[in-house]
Image (cartoon, rainbow, N blue to C red; front, side, top):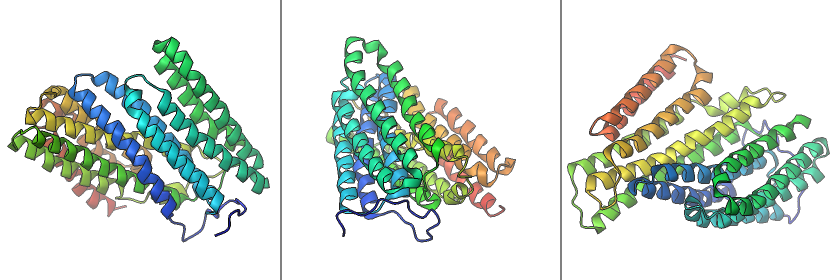
Length: 388
């Protein structure tokens, strides 16, 4: 393996492009942060701090998702797998672990460690863009815009710390502003020329991360059950219902996500007008975030049914399951399925499923109804997909 290799753009039509072992390792390290964010959301729901938990989760997951997303799209365009590239990627991984360590503090307003981890990851990516600028003259301006834009926003994140320490009420408004600035960087950079990302590679990377996030959902529920048993709480039919419902929800979500090819959707994007690709990529914040939040909701339902000392109300814990699943279904149709088939035969079942799932919040077993509705939707989707 060469220590230094020219960081030239990859062929976007390579028929054999697949995720690399380093990308898979990166995903596994990122999911540590996802698991901690979901765990904090679960505990905040059970401690009746639902709003604080939701805001903390959305902030934490934005930081996780955006850094993963930027790494993924850069790698699709420029991964040359030399020693320098691997070392800079490992630096990003270390930053993700620092961010993960800072997530519990982020939920309580202690932002320092989370910001440090985030900035480490972003600075590593700046170095990658500068390398790309040197080796890719055709897109040098684009690469330099990426590097400059990311660097400027990181300075703003660092400035965010003392400002929010002096005026905590500015934490969320400034977070939203800086988040918008982060999202604006690719729009600004790619105006001078698009990067050469690979549509099927991108689709595979998102699919793999979705699978890992669903695994975190299973882990969250399992840990909640384990905690109930440690507290000598009895297995009840209600807890068993949560377990069975969780299996239905996870496997149905997996089936629906992969029912049609996302790579085919991205292959149709006009590279001169990449707004559709940006929307697809950024919109997965809601799909992946909702999938992670379902795990927190199921864990909160275990607390509720097991009679844990700390548990949320029936309504709140029910909403913690039904709302994320509804968001996942809506965004899955908006970003993916409607590009394959925008007719009522596709959107009507999804709309009906969303309505039934949200309505189930008022029932004694919203998790069970949600799982059964998703399973029914899978059956419908299997049949409809054959007609396209």
